[in-house]
Amino acid sequence: MIDGDKYIETTSAYFDFLIKEFGFKIFAKTINGNFFYSVQYKNETQLISISYENLEDFLSIAIVSLKDGGANVYDETKALNLNQLSAKILPHINKNGITENNKYFYQYSPQNAAERQLLKTAKELRICLKYFGKDETFMKK
Image 1 (cartoon, helix red, strand yellow):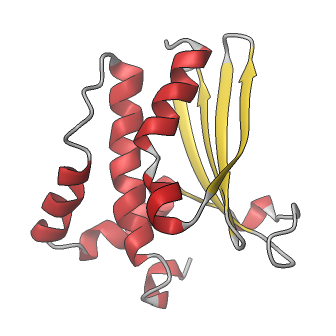
Image 2 (tube, one colour; image 1 turned 30 degrees about the vertical axis):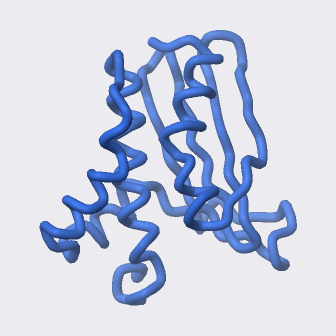
Image 3 (cartoon, one colour; image 1 turned 90 degrees about the vertical axis):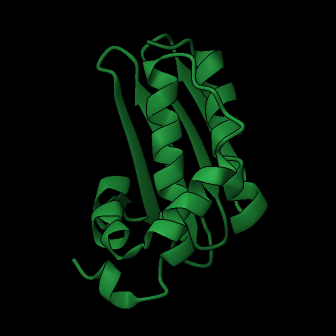
């Protein structure tokens, strides 16, 4: 379990690459009691939702294509979760790519299981986004 404010702070730090490298902005931060937390990032074409259900210890990363040039309209049925994206992209990444990606995150020292899970998914998302859309065979369902 993790405190809501700590979740928002940790997520904002671990996923700062979305802002620095991919042109996203924080769109929404949500804390619903002590059981559900979410940080959403948005750019002109995508919304990335990083949600955590504290009681279930369940972390979900969803990547949603936005309609109408970034309007707040999206089709959740066409959302990719990070597990789907990772399964399509990670087998094509060489060891050097993974090593370089890991170097970006050396500065972080997770203090508990929830923070370790957030860091692991941040690493996966960053490397996947570098290849997202570059080879359309990755994206075929």
